[in-house]
Length: 134
Image 1 (cartoon, rainbow, N blue to C red):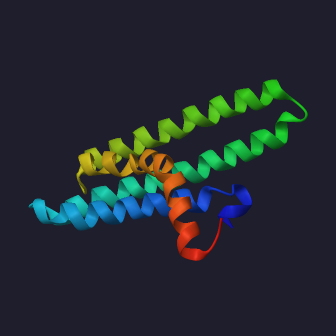
Image 2: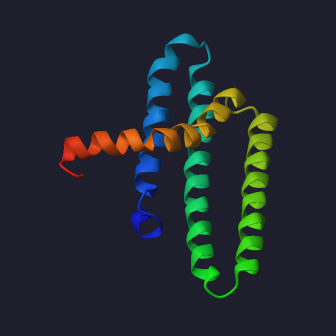
């Protein structure tokens, strides 16, 4: 399903989840509040996956729209980007207000989107060797 939106989206989501798993396995040993650490981390990872999917959908819709009206497509991209970041800020405020997870780990979880985006060429190359794809 994700591949229909964007060919690289499944790899991006896989990279985000891999990043989250690596942070979970390595960092859990060094904190006292293991539950708060895990909740905050996976809260951030969920936000990163949601942002990746939303970004891919906005790009897909805008590319389809550009053929008719470039100005409207540009405004739509900007509006959806601002809305995406407002939602992330609201979700961070909710996490911080109710204190049901580690806010710092949620921020690190959201950084999984950036880490995965930068690591995607390497992941594609490695997965191609493992699974016989080019």
